[in-house]
Length: 413
Image 1 (cartoon, rainbow, N blue to C red):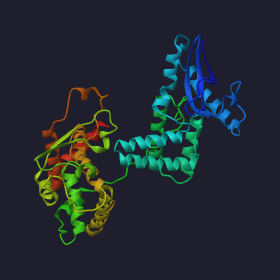
Image 2 (image 1 turned 60 degrees about the horizontal axis):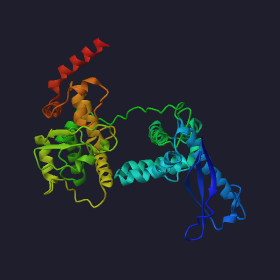
Image 3 (image 1 turned 90 degrees about the vertical axis):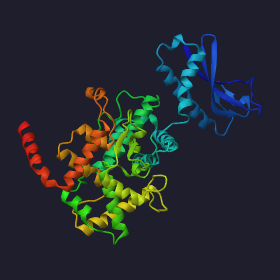
Image 4 (image 1 turned 180 degrees about the horizontal axis):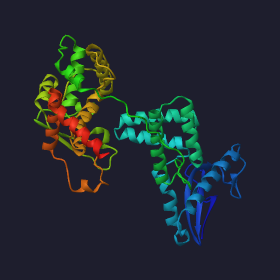
């Protein structure tokens, strides 16, 4: 049977003459050692498994007991550990330290994951995680892994409610925390009989009404705003996203538009979806006319804007607010409104949902059997985009069909 204990090797000091403290693994006559970060100046500072004759002896002993307890807990989770050799047990016990070194609190684990996410190039997600980390720090402080449980999560949710966080804000923060909790459980850093989110329901906020009516889109298309550079930019970017099937801004500024067709995977989902969908669509004439005014020699859009893409998008949204005011468009008008509006119009005129999802670049739901056999093709997406554009150009032609479809849907309810 394996036993763990603290010890030093008095006959083997380091080159500096110091004595590291080890966790000794004993299996019958077989022994292995896990080196801790603690060092003694002299072998006489170790007596009967404890640090003595040092000003910091009490603190060191507490930390060493914590280390020993950590490895003993890991040992208890090894099934049939009595059949393993000391070397095999050592490899199992230190595996977590190799993967996630020096993590004692949930906060430290989150900070480490933020660094890893940033190294992967997912800067916007890392910044969102940092915002969540600030809220969590303010509510809970440093939370040791052993008390990262359902009580802590429930208190965090209540704290956000009391401090005026919206359902949407709480949803984002709780989803971030839950994702990190699941990662910690997977790595063996967090062990619990009940999942920390067992009694916490993540709120689902009402979707924001960001789409605009067809009359507003027609007004944007028909109004001459060439007298204003800001209004022209707002109009062009809104319509460009709309004509390209609701393309996100992050994708719009990265794609090479020099060919008649484009092929891309949404940046937003490329890092964290199990299976991504490559979008292939043709560039319609309406989009091509706008692209020709902004496209550089390499096919990528050029805006002559010195700041970051995020700041550029904020500037475009600011211009869209001015455009909404200029055209007396009620409601919120943002770059994202083009995507929402395209999807809404497509649904209203009866475009099948799989084709709409293809245009939007949503990930494939592999759990649905039909998706294993049927796939949307480019010509279907091109036809859907053309149909939506035709609907905007002449909505009266589609009016009888929309009314008949609505009546049929009501009869089926």
